[in-house]
Amino acid sequence: MRNLQKDNDDDIYEGFDNPMTSAMQYMNFESAQGVSAPMQAASILRAQEKRLGTSRLGTAAQRQGTARMGTAMRGYQGGEEARPMTSIRAAGYTSQGKPGSAGMNAFASAGGGSAPPLEKKDASSPEDEARELEKKVNKLLEDSAIARSENKLQLALDLAKEAARKERQLGKLREQKQLMDQMNIDLTYAVYFNLASQLEANEYWPEALNSYSLIVKNKQYANAGRLRINIGNIYFKQQKYPAAIKMYRMALDQIPHSGEHLRFKIMRNIGNAFVRMGNYQDAIMSYEASMEGKPDFQSGFNLIVCYFALGDREKMKRSFAKLLDIKDSNFGEENDDDEANEDEDEDGKRGLLRC
Image (tube, rainbow, N blue to C red; front, side, top):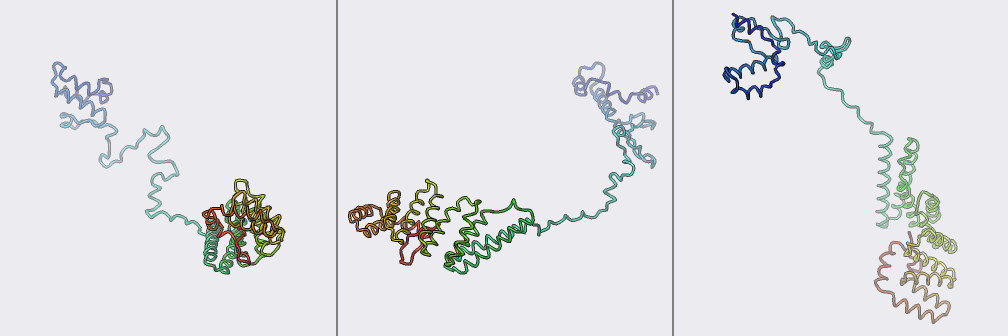
């Protein structure tokens, strides 16, 4: 009985007061005097179980039914409800939740049905509408260019006009919906340049001049000044040679010195206009400037014709000798580069540079 009373009075927290770890105790099994190693192991295991709140019932306690269980081990006894947790009250939490709140039961009370579907994005938003309209403009531009390459000039013009109408509609939409930051200047330039080009191809000279002028006057287009070459070509076809020369020279001022190849071609256009006016002396100056910078067969031949018109045989001989020095490859390159950029006049002579 005395041994049983001693087991019941053991302190359940005695494991926390022992500074020696279980590992150290196990290492000292063999060094213990008077106690066998199995007894030491059982003692250490019992101390660990008490510290974790999972103590086993002793043999005597099991027989008498007088073992005491810790708070953490208490559950349902005799149908009674377990004691509520109180260790979290100091932090402001309770197991019952705050008054007026459903706590974790809110999920259960919400029902077991699925969540409502996500709200669908409106497909007709201003941004999407503008984007779709811009795609239509690009498609019309592409179709117009294809029709032009197939020599369907009227169809190309109709498509160009439709593209311009759609582009104006796009600009108004963005202005009304406060989407000015999405304005595509390059698209606007491409639309009106294509329209002017198709008008010129169909020989609608006044409309083409108006379209080119609108582009040139817009300061937002950095290289629009080069389109004065096309305006000069229209004046040339209308036999308005002074106006054509004026436009050629204005375009010449827009070309940087790094673009010498283009500058010399513009000089040749100026010489062609002077020839039509019968001003051979000024035409010779333009052709000579072109031949000194980048000799080409067309400028050299026109220069010989001008010397012939003035009766200067010596200069004709020298110009003809220079013409023979021009390599055939250079003449072939000129034909390849300028075939799409030069117009044929009524005499069948190629000579006008286009942009």
